[in-house]
Length: 510
Image (cartoon, rainbow, N blue to C red; front, side):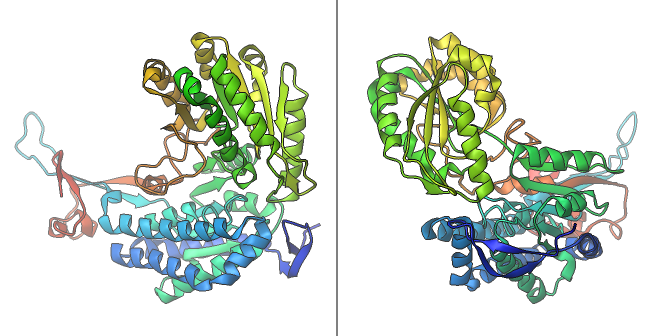
């Protein structure tokens, strides 16, 4: 039976809050997709300055919501005020960064190879290239970032920056938060005199709406952040369409941390304490949570394990995003505790639903290699520490890992030879490699990659954070021997000097 309404849930108590919320139906999916398609040609033709101003207006409208947005997000996610105020700032920062990207114009990748009529043995035609937007994009809100990876999050911001209308399937765990942000975007659309179909917002629990959205023939790409099962389900729908489309899904990672021998010997205990701090941040509900630690056995590792055990035993249970996420976490922790060759190193205070307690497990390389499930993500504050007998065993474990969002090296200068040996392996496994830090937290900037080989993402060539995220929603078109009257304005000779870089006859011209 089709549900016609549902309720916002208070994460901390599981109680319903507020008035019933109407659930969109399949007819709404079709309506919003049709509106997005109708708006596409008008929106993609907006001048760079107008599109940049629109993105900035969205940021301003989000800020203008004020306290009601933070209060709703706190209630629906269980996340603390400071975290959500910071996330609101990041959401606005992403929009403003993409506004600057649009203004700069490099995303167009303008290329001009002038005609060479006298070239022998054959003349060269006049060829000019630009990137154009794909078309309407479906975006799925994430559970763990109700602002920065949700309704106006990075996928929405980068798709709008590319010139693509967006239809968002709001995450059912935070419908009030999503509705507030959707209202802000709608106000920005109206204020900038853009077609209403530039942005649409679908609300409802279950998978029916999302499946219909991806299947709609007017949708040309999908942005998703969530579970491996969810991302793969959407990818199957997208590939089974009459016209398959790309699904840019950020799904699953354990983000291995490598503790190099010299660093362990020098500061093993300090690393153990800092590790647990990263692991338990936000109840471990980060895509980049350090769910796997690799180290060579020795006194330094013993000090690390002792400090980590002490730190985790002092960790208090934290509210998890939803009851379903909490239940999945408890199931994953129980599976690790019962796995062959795995010992429980330590646990934090026990939590009752929806609060999850931290858990650390330790195993050796042989047991880890024999059971691939030990390397699968358990979303929450649990981690597996793998002890390796020597460098060769460490390398074997690394080579057997799945794709990851991040890989971390804790190292001193004496560890550089080993780091140089494993770095080529890590490059093949992860989208971001960091030294002497912790992977939780993703900087929004031009050099950031938040992606990686499967199953971290469905397409390792892309990123969902940073200015390169815009490239997911663009495709190249080449124009051969078109007159100036027919060429896109930015490819005409008269457009030179508009501030956008161009590659002219193979030479970059600024």
